[in-house]
Length: 74
Image 1 (cartoon, one colour):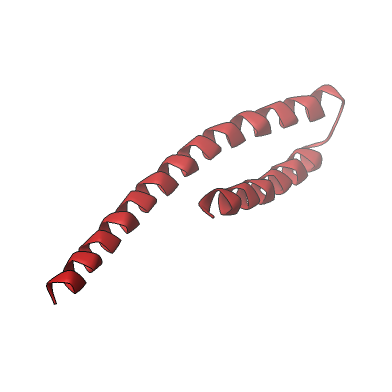
Image 2 (cartoon, one colour):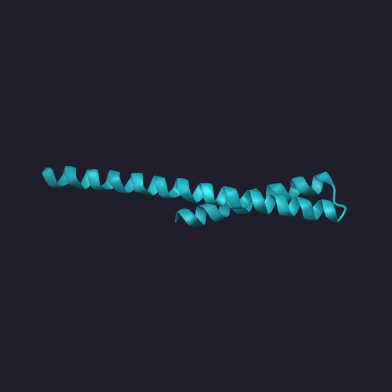
């Protein structure tokens, strides 16, 4: 029974470490996403784009962020 409880504690420790890593990856990806969105919005405005185009780019970038996040987690 001692081995089982040690194994469970080890699994909990690994789970906690993974949660920390995921939180770190989220923060890094969010900061990069902000820079990408700002650059895309500036490019759209500079070329005479509309507000709707900026909203479209924003939604598309969020989908990319979600994909990157999912890949980073696995």
